[in-house]
Length: 127
Length: 290
Figure 1 (cartoon, chains in turn red, brown):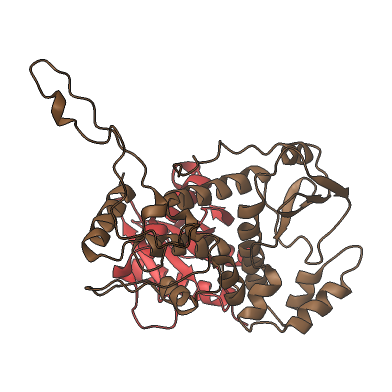
Figure 2: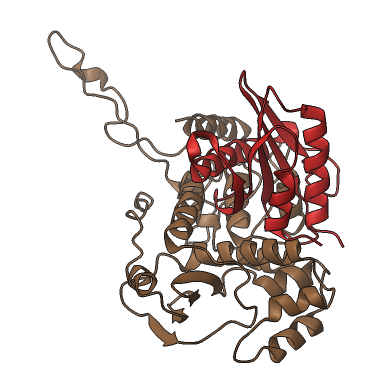
């Protein structure tokens, strides 16, 4: 039954990870961080990734029409140097948070990292 | 009929800054709600305009109201209600932390920034949840300012903020909505305001306001009628002087007046006619990309 800090510690064990955080996408507020952030600025990473999430959330293109929940799972941005993973945390009550994972492209396995982050997001809110 | 109010000036922490610098513990009560501090950092915010920690959990059916009341009642001089909910198996630690923060942020949006006057500080006062998570005042003000900017982008439709939400069904086209908007429209019964819908569903009052404004901009929520009770729609927002090029001044050497952009007039935004509706939606899309 991990809390945010434990979940972020476990995220730091994902191969190739550089840094991680739990962020509210409506405000860019970080609930916790671990490791490094691009340009050593966790707050900027939170604000910037939350803007990406807002852009996705306000558009109908990415909406799973007819479903009982927003249906949003993850966002993946790849660059020549790294991977940025965003995983939505689904809670039984209303909330707007995601786990953010920054990975070194040379050392990370994108598929593995995505599965691990999915499991961490689920474990955060389940018994 | 004036233009919409300008956005508020840059936020200042004021009294909160001083309390943070002094690393105080206690409760600061303002006109809109209450900010709880522990050693100068915020660990909870309460506000009647936003669904609280308990409302979110009970509305979702996650924790019974009775259990939350027991946890609140049991909290003594060193409150630890949040931890007791986790140790009792009612919530995971992660759920406690996320729900706590969601409630805190939503209340902070309506409470901050505090006015310079009209606040009272009670040293040592505590909240029953206990210090689940603490946030620096600067970080909280930045988060609240970002939310404010998101809402201000739709300020032309601010009239829907406090009115009962009435769903509209413009003719002639299919409307695609997001999951959030569908849920909001499903509870738009013409009686409840956005805040009342937020409370009923235990969901973010801030997001409910934002989505109500966006739905109004898309023509899917009616703008409230004006004071005379007359529907205010059916026409394009009036042009303002200077918003066009005057054809009479196109003679030789005459200087053309510069076209200037004016904010739309929200009272004139109800647009039952499909053509007008299309123009308003086009303008909305353009403004979004400014």
